[in-house]
Length: 328
Image 1 (cartoon, rainbow, N blue to C red):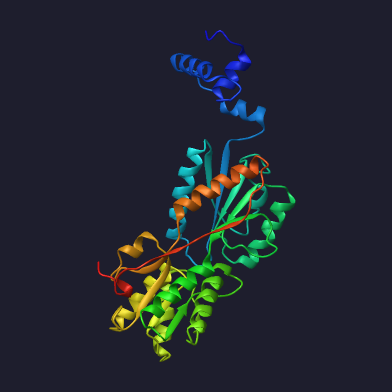
Image 2 (image 1 turned 90 degrees about the vertical axis):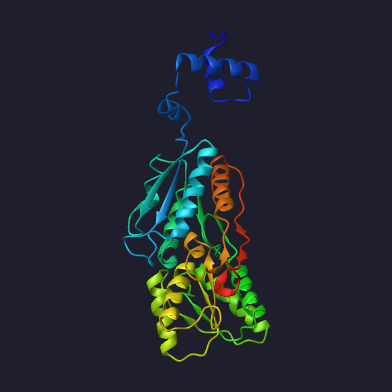
């Protein structure tokens, strides 16, 4: 019907630049009239690609079985949208680090590449990345950029985020801060947030606090704050490694009748949706999940095509709300 060869029709339906725009439009219009659909499975067999990306969301050791970190939900939505815009399906799987996940997706031809989101304990996670690299998988990690780490990464500039939080508290006249979170090699993102915070305090002549350990959940932040209050530590401000911890900590402060922000200024990290609606609304370090989702997908597709990709950091920003004195 189009008056062209079968190979030209095939190229036109793939939007190949080898076919001129007029012919492509003609072929697409005839296909629409005939209700013709390309058999994706057959096409994928020919190209040896699935046109599918796999998003592997790892169980965070800091959350229970009933919830997913709200920050990851925002990332999930933006990655899904970016994949669709690029013409890829997205296979989403919730993983356990004990599973043999590294050979279940690209190696088994279920996906052309992998996006790894979340990692639990990084010490346990790193050997899995080494196996992926050895198998020649195309993968990109959302998370820390660690020296010697295999693969490609995209992440927030966590050190800068800690610096921004410290500078804000200093500008408010706060001189006795505390920190809640797991600032250790097991959580390198949290460790960098803490390092940026402490280095900036030192430059201002303020003694940095020892970290108060907490897992990444509201209840852990609540319990960590109760322990700080019971220890009689004198503090006038709080920086937490995540918004979840900050929300839990604020609950403990309110239970002890400590006014926020009059007595204690609070800064979180992530800018999850709930941070806008807690009372008082939470000042936090914003991570741009829309841009991050787009870059993750773009970079992974580039890797699949054999192009060079550099690991990079996304700059965070400060969102000031009532927990640091801003008016609603």
